[in-house]
Length: 466
Image (cartoon, rainbow, N blue to C red; front, side, top):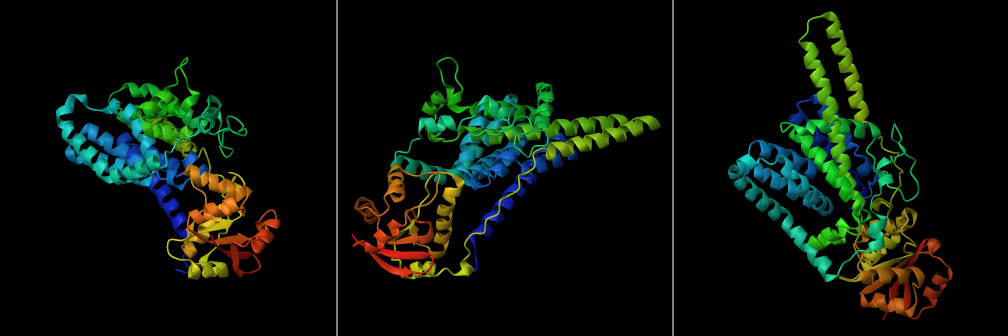
């Protein structure tokens, strides 16, 4: 409608995703650690997941609920294998894929590497029906989305630049680099660094909890510790090598979707998840154990000591939960439908079905400031509803990259206009005060292939002819 805004939907989705992260983390830790304090700390820590909060623009990566659901369902299935439990595991995996194929690929790879640690091999006969059911459910939920994605990648022969993948892979220094809002900073972030540390206190508590993983009864500890180790190694991507052997390249040969990954460092989403939860579990269970030990003693001094331990434990859990505080969000006021831009109304009324428009200027580079104008054009697109040839995306086929360069360097050359005509472009929209150089607008007015249809103080709309 005229008064609707995609910003509202965007913020609602972000809020629900963060809330579900917290609720499912609370449910996972509370049930398997039997510590309410650990559950609350885990819920807050996942709501404020460091990488998810730092990269809110990657909205598809904020939702970690499917991963947490799968972990909870898997641990319950390992305790009591059944076809219902397997179905819940399959639902979790399917939900993860529907929320983010990126997370589904990364978590699926990590889960395959460490899920077997908690598997009840002694009850393999009872587990097979559940495993089969879970696999079928996961395939049914995620299959159509995965198939469509594979078709698109195959159609465009999609590949990644090896240098880009290398640059977006973690290095050892990244793991000791924390965000600026961390209470206990460990290393000052330099240009090009990824602040992947979930917090020195969290890491310390998680390391102290590693000996507990030796007990088969502590299945949650074992799953979290193995996830942290496997995902942190995968985050190195092609930066990790053993002699002349690069495991990432071998993995890409065995598993083709890995060859399409642009940012291996994002395995750190799972590393941070595992470390935060393990730190909460370790500290929460330590507090619970001290409390139970002192509750059985009747001496007044013991009781006072027990209360002091509880207070200290609550403070530690609070520090773990809030160790990395979210940075202050920079607000931006987007174009809203109720403001009623006249050029938007004109395009909506004039655009022909299945015809496209292109909006100038396009982004000069990949910086956030430059991409902001592209984002604004895309938000206007939700109002006029026309197909938009330019815009920002994580997936841009090679031919569209060539068009983008043309629109940036030679937007009105005959070759560029021919490319636009070949893509059924009907209208060209220009933001006059931001078009560089200004002679480009003069050329547009003088071009025999462009006809001025609409103009106001800020915008001009041209029709393109073959």
